[in-house]
Length: 75
View 1 (cartoon, rainbow, N blue to C red):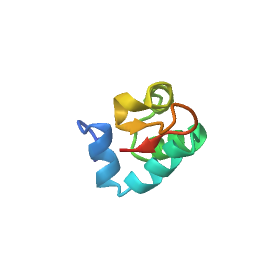
View 2: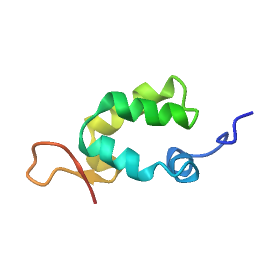
View 3: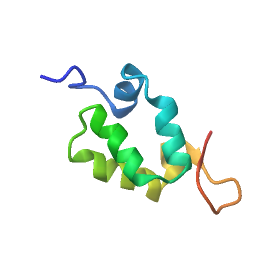
View 4: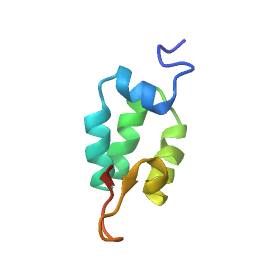
């Protein structure tokens, strides 16, 4: 069983010390990098839908677009 079993995405990223990498990937709207980071914390196929969900609605996940356009920034 994975050491990440039963953890939330944020808990997984924290445990793996990947929050900074994740935030950079989100701000850059780098879907491929986001997916690779999520796969490093054993998200499997959920990495794709998780990355897509964050990019589709960044405000829901704690990011915002300063001018309503462009890449999201961490709050």
